[in-house]
Image (cartoon, rainbow over all chains, first blue to last red; front, top):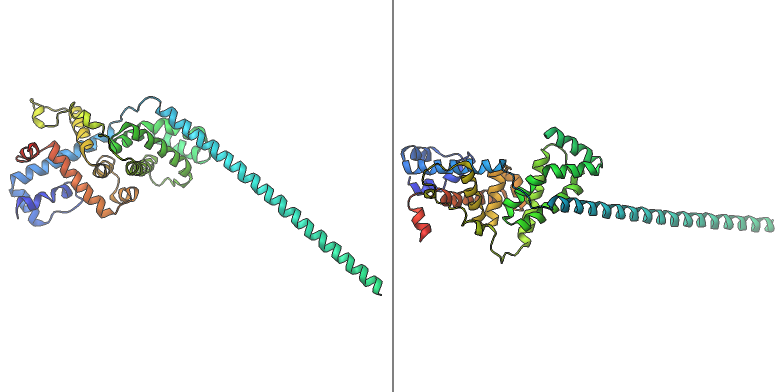
Length: 121
Length: 190
């Protein structure tokens, strides 16, 4: 096994994402160059992980902008909710009126039929 | 702090807007840090953070609490950054190109051989800025923020295999830039 073959595997095996097979392990154990490269990858991962604790200072005004955006979104949501509530109320009103009309028409038809029957008898 | 955040999340989920505002105040600097690391551009990072909090606000009821709130927010931020990076056509040079003049990344730039953590951090940040955005996103989310491959793939809209390939390439490029082996420096100089 050559260094070039091992080198392509080092970025994956450095954190255990991939498991090195016996041949790779044996090569690394006996090859100073690959050992050095593996150490460099470990240093890299450690340095990257340490970035996690660093918090960068946001530019001034960002918090205000975020909160203003949320406020605007909240207001839009409230308006949508109000509009959808009104729409439901209008629809309900129309449905109730239509139902009342239908009941009225049925009653009138029933009374007219009764009157016709009474006249016939 | 986790208890504080947990309490705020519970209150915000119940509809308490002030609690959500407080959550923003507690977390926005960290969210901005991630956004800046992903986009490498302050203006884009600001847009990403604002969009991330809007999405978080709209989707808060879906947050089940089986993950940490910060991790959930990281995922949203990563997703917003992926969208933003896809949207932004970068004719401009990325900002950190300018910073490369501030931080010499070559190891010999530290003649005493005693590079402290702050200098190394700056070198790593600068090197991240040199990566192509799609490689940078994966290595930041995996190696800095410790997100699993599966979640990274999901938020970036790629397969898990593609995420692993990008991670592999990103680590290789970073290692070559920050800790070049003999022969690699000469190759880069040419």
